[in-house]
Image (cartoon, rainbow, N blue to C red; front, side, top):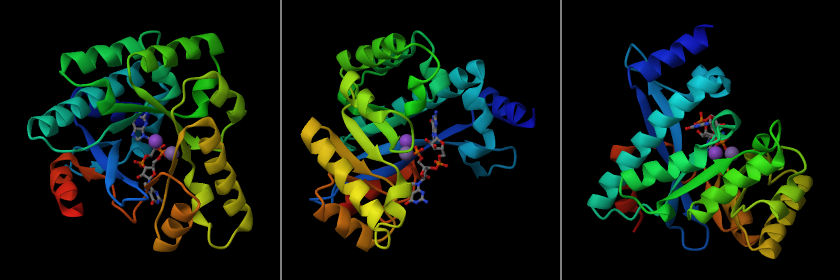
Length: 255
Ligand code: G
Ligand code: G
Ligand code: NA
Ligand code: MN
């Protein structure tokens, strides 16, 4: 298909460009870390978003090649920030079900981390509940436990939109719950969204997991989430995904 060809082009030409979106501590207002979001440069030099190569994330071969390019570039960026003592906190990396299904995902990531001389605390891995579908739960458990025992924290992304989330929180070493932005969008108008967000924050508190709210675009959304005790916020209100080169200045500006 055209999409797979396009994705192959991005991989072959090494055109994967991670962008970084800040994650903000809702109590202090300071950056707690960043989420790495894949971007790629097309033949005309334009920066494109993953929806233009989404099918590649489902192709077992291309997904791994894309993720390897992404992981190495992210680790080079982190290495450069570390060398300049830039306090970036951590970088959260998205892992698709296809790449996660490879037997050696955790070992590969930990190996790249050592290769680049980074600390496990520099990184977090975000998975959606789709990783729990398909292959056996024992397999997912093994992979997540390997990441966790290597010191890499794990976030459950798009929480509330998947299936059977509560048993996953109990069984797997999940450190962070990311409330899907569909629940944040109408927080002002929709009482049900408020109740759901409140319940998830309470769940996080009881289970001792950090709660991140995604898609915060307005000060009013921020105020509600901060008042409810949500730990971390992410969204256009605090910053759009930016190239690595803009991260040090963005960190400098906030203090
Ligand atoms: O950055 P944007 O909002 O356009 O991202 C669109 C989707 O692509 C999101 O679901 C996001 O999780 C996913 N995505 C972004 N970067 C990566 C990546 O490096 N790996 C994987 N597997 N998914 C990514
Ligand atoms: O699936 P995941 O949660 O990883 O997707 C993150 C996506 O959400 C990225 O494509 C990112 O660009 C997008 N995003 C980040 N902040 C906001 C926001 O405030 N509003 C909207 N609509 N999208 C956002
Ligand atoms: Na994500
Ligand atoms: Mn998400």
